[in-house]
Length: 173
Image (cartoon, rainbow, N blue to C red):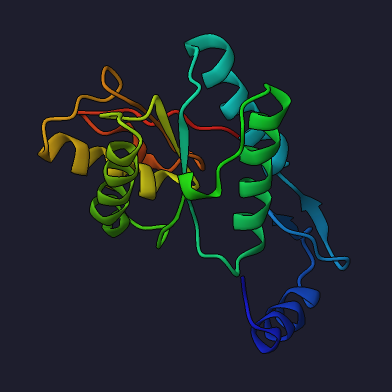
């Protein structure tokens, strides 16, 4: 997530500490690392929706295309669909901003795509992170679309804001 110069600066500062340094969420050979298996966790969310909720028409609000985790989560979404014999359709993937502001345009895209296929709503939308899910849930609420009754929306990351008074975002990790 950081530029090379920022990483070098951080490594220089951290190399002088006398306490253990633990890198969370990435890998740095100079420190102990705790790595989340995003692919497995994201695959499990998709599989849960298919197996426990019988979802078949599942959209994905992906993150920024050039981010490594965006591709990992997208591939996990795709592989989970295929593993459950559900056809992967790249048109069911919307690339968002990873922030709440992508909720309205993502919902526009999804509803338009559903309408072209003769559907009102998809069964579920799996968002690359919680902030995208929060934005989508707010957009749904503003239009009278009930979550999860009309469509299920999931997030991913477990941010504190995901436990809002009017909604709760299912998270993996």
